[in-house]
Length: 305
Ligand code: GLU
Figure 1 (cartoon, protein in one colour):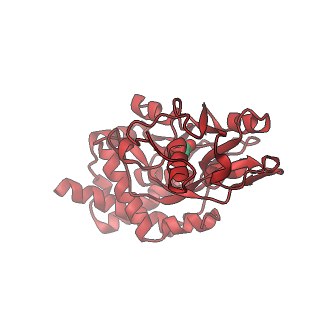
Figure 2 (cartoon, helix red, strand yellow; figure 1 turned 45 degrees about the vertical axis):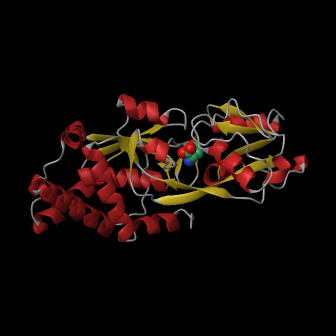
């Protein structure tokens, strides 16, 4: 019990110090120094009590000893995780949350660009400590990884070429839709088409649904990354591109439009190794930052409200 109290004291003191130091900053490079914030954190902690000697679980202590928090982030989702191709620097709400976690631990942060297909492998292999990459919390995924309380909720929608004449879910009947491997998108679309009465839904079982074999009223092509789906849409290899609206935004160029429907709320959480001490720490931080307005501030900073 004492150990938990000491760790929480440190975390909360750190979170307070960081919110005093301001939270709207962005990491200017893939490895951002956090020495200023770390000293602010320990300064605040020394007035509070015990956090300068905080005892962490072994996996958290390993991050502290390494001096670097490794975080899997998106690199093409504006407002969440975006890497400037010219400078290499990352910006976005998820980038800032990662930096703030690193600051709380007094370590640097290192961003690794991940996709929906690679993020869990990299977490499982230990190449990254956590995923902050538009990663939707689902019951199925919770069996394999820990997720924090959601820090943002998006919805799924569909992007089309306006010349296709597709404007709604009904227009997707018998079409081929591009989705990312390892994403929630295909299942969400089929469920939405069933709910809208566009598909009968016979034979749909959410537990066994597989985009690769589903052919009943809509078909899917799976890709490893989003630029490939965008290219396939331009080339007419797919009729539509389905994923979370936040991810689609960068591909909504001239001559393209969203269909009218948005569906399937996507709650984004930080994913960590199941049962790890770092899971508990991330949860404490996210709930603290939800309660004190820090997360709302990031939503406003990046125009995501
Ligand atoms: N957020 C959705 C998911 O976790 C879409 C895929 C993605 O994040 O790239 O499956």
